[in-house]
Structure formats: structure tokens, C-alpha cells
Image (cartoon, rainbow, N blue to C red; front, side, top):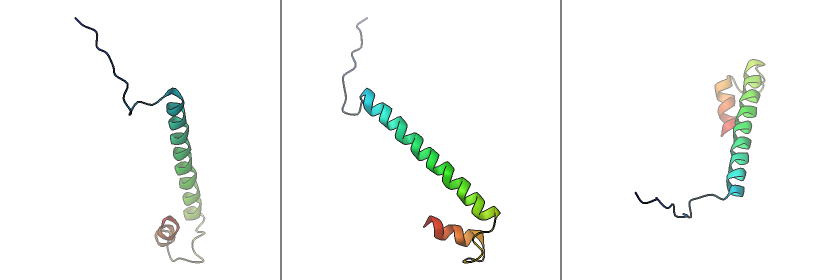
Length: 64
């Protein structure tokens, strides 16, 4: 049976590109985590109350 030969595609990432992609994805994941923690504190401590009647209204303004 003949061996399959994988051709190099422009979609393939180099080792450095793969490393960079992984590092950037981790930064994005961390940013979402940090944002979630901050939103939870705003909600739990009701720090929205000076400008908004509810967390939902205040949260919407923060996110948009």
C-alpha cells in the first residue's frame, strides 16, 4: 500500500505560530475570567446602584 504524503498547506501553522496562537487564546480566556469576576463583584456588592436601578441595566451599559 502506498504511503500517504501530506502536502504543506497555507492553513498549516508553524511551530512559532502554534505557540503564539495558544498563548493568545489563553490571554483571551483569562480576560473573560477576570471580566466575570469583576461583574460578579459589581453585582454582589450592588456597586451599580448609584447609576442604575438593577444589575441587568448596569451590566448592559458596561458590556455595550
